[in-house]
Structures are given as C-alpha cells and as structure tokens.
Length: 329
Image (cartoon, rainbow, N blue to C red; front, side, top):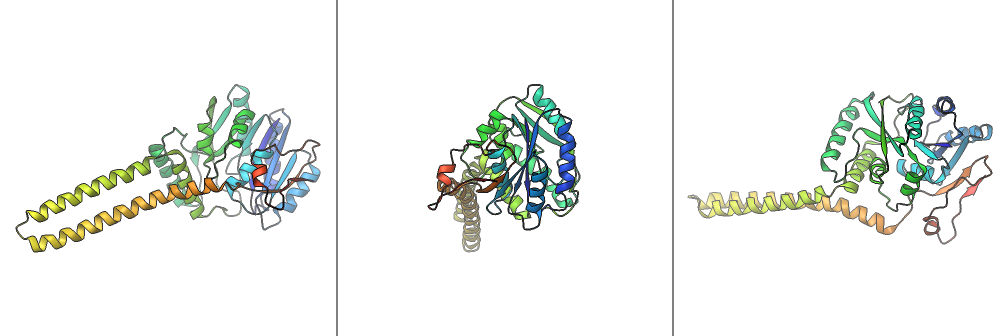
C-alpha cells in the first residue's frame, strides 16, 4: 500500500481540488493507497472538509492535532500514522505536483528505498524567496558535514524501513531532507518543476523559514562552531598586531587611543558573534534535553478496522499527568 502524508493548515480553498488530483495520480499506480491528511490546528473549515472527505472516501485518514504544531510536527504525526509499504510526503498546495507521485512509486518499485524529488526549476510568486532558496541550499551544501541533496524539500518517498528509522529518532529540531539522507538506504532521484501555490497565501512566515534553515545547518554541521574558533584566533592575532603597532608607533598617544578602541570593538564583536552561534546550538540542546514531543495527536479519523497509529516509543513519555491517548473515531 502507498501512503501519502499531507500536512494541512488553513487550506480550505484547495483541499477538494488537491484530493481529486492526488486520487487520480494514485489510481495510476495500480496499488492500494491511503491519503493521511494532518490537520495542524487549522482555524478555517479545513477540518470539516477533511471529515466529510473521510466519511465518503475509505482511502482518507484524517489526523487531528491538539493545536498548531508547525510543519515538522504535522509531518511527524503523519509518518507515525501512515501504514503504507511506501510513504510519500508532500504539501497540499500544488507546489509539489501530484502527477509526479506515480514517478516516485515507479522508482520505488524499481528498487529504490528512498526516492528524492529534486526541483529542476521553481515558480515563486514571491521573487525574494525564489532568490533566497538557491542561496540557502548552496550555503547548506558548503557547511554540511554530511552530503544532503540540494534543491530538495520534503517531497519524496520512503519505504517502510526508512519511515520506521525516522520515526525512531528522538530529536525535535528536524530537517527532514537531511534526516532522509542520513538514514542511508538506496536512493533514487526524480526531477520535477516546482509550481507556485494554486491558491491562497503561503502559511510559513519568513521567521519560520529562518528557523527551519537554522535547524538544517545546526543539525548537520559543526562548521559554524569551528568558524567561531577561527574568528577568535583571528581577533586575537589582530589585537596583537594593534598592540605591537601601538608600542612602536612614532605618535604613541594618537595611535594608542585608536588602537585600543579598534581592538575593543573588534574583539567585542567577535565575542558576540561567537556567543550568538553557540546560543543557537545550546538552545537546540535544551530542546532535546526537555524531550517534548513534536506534536500531540488529538484524534485519528479512519474507516479502516486497523488502528492507523503506529506504536511509538515516545507515546509513554508524551503522557501528561492526566493521561494521554490517541482516539480513533
């Protein structure tokens, strides 16, 4: 069976259109399939529309989260719920074209355990993002201590073993394309042209994208920390040069004042920069130590007799004092 995990947040104008398109695409695979829609605390009528879809289509599973947990939280809940032998992850705004899904499935049937959808081109209504994304991927490629496919987002397919491997990871600040590459397994690449949204506005804010980029860099690279050491060494060397030039200057009073001021400013700025970088890492360490879940599932709506939620080692840890359960309607 093929599972498709789709995070949904305030997508009422696109849900029915997307479901029709993904249904047509999955029918081409000649396999049994399910679509796991994860309602990430939508404030519009998305949940009602999804419930109506689920009641009329046995292929639909609806995961209702307790609140808005963000993109990675919704995807993680979907991966825990998906029962397929292979699982496709994609957004529901048509930026990841549903017609590419049969190509991903064919690559999986040909023997690939992980199939990465790589963007050949991208059509962005927001021109700034269209310019920033390629720069980010190049920066990540230069900094990463582990090779991660460039120009690849969450869109792709993983077999059951790869999904179980990612579900077993305990880290909270996740960069899914990096984790998908890190788990290994045989890879294949399918190229596609990323489209602009079919309707509505993008739900990820600019700051959310910055945070996601920082998660990607800090999860797979120690180079920023090593850069701090390099900058500290350079500032120490520069301060030494200023001290020497002050000692041997012909105008010691003038040069001394300039040298001291420059040294303080230079060293101080380097220290603040290094503290900022270390703070990013320390904050993520704090997140991991707290061990809070990425998301909490309120209910799962499914017509299947099988419980759609996979047993997860974190569920016992996720129970608050009053108890925590996953309800199946």
